[in-house]
Image 1: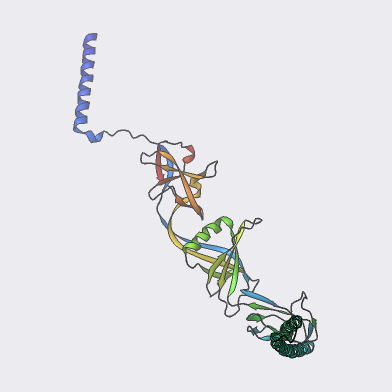
Image 2: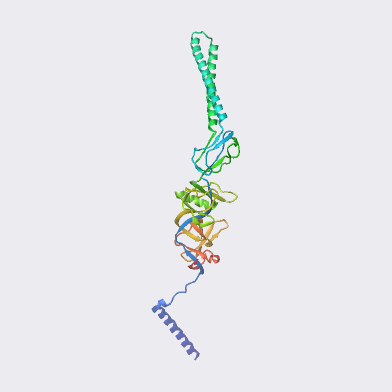
Length: 376
């Protein structure tokens, strides 16, 4: 009885195996291999993005040119010849200093010159006579040499007298104080009757050129490196201004970035940028605080979220990527600069790479992962 039961069970098992293989042969699509699931991670598929680079920096207005008007001789101010706060041109006379003593000194120098020239003519004539007499041995060689030396001294005296006349003329000209540059002049710091000297500390007035005008800005040293590289690549970098207290008020004229300092301030770690902007109506005044917008244009770049990058002990950056086998791998990268909450990648990644943004903490090189799109 027991043997019959065993035979029956064996027959049933054999029949079941035969039916199973027949089923697989006829319906192979019904049997799917079990897919091994990896660690779930959030990934970002990299695509080049057109990015606009625009810096907002605080700035301060500085004069394009500024000159302090100072006296170059001693004397009494006899007249002020300009309207305070007016626009003046280079070469306009601003002050008159009493010139009586300087005019007298010039006349004296001219008289000395005439006397030196008269004496020179007499010595010259005597020298010519001695040149004839020495040929016929009517005078000694010593006498001739003495006369010739007198003639040379007379010529030197004439040159000294001419230099004295020139100096006296210069001093006389300095009694008229002229504008060294064009611009808007300040209030006068002296009045008629004031004694001025050539070495005094106080200037007479200040002339400021307001059109065009400078905007001086501060930029961090690291960002300035990228900015300088952009300045080399672009011919012009436009700059727009707005009043710092109210960014909605925009200055109508557009300036151009012209200069960046060559050294970084050790105390602040910043560098000075300078732009020049037209100021035909003198709206912008030196000392005014503004906000400058520097437009560096736009270009296509690869952006990686900063949260996806890991800094190594050596200071370099790396990211985790998903390779074609769906395994996590380490990829070192080089960056240009920060952009908002991303890094601009210079080298190490390309279009189509899958960068792990979330979940890479639990991974090791070669870990099987299950990537899902990352939602910002």
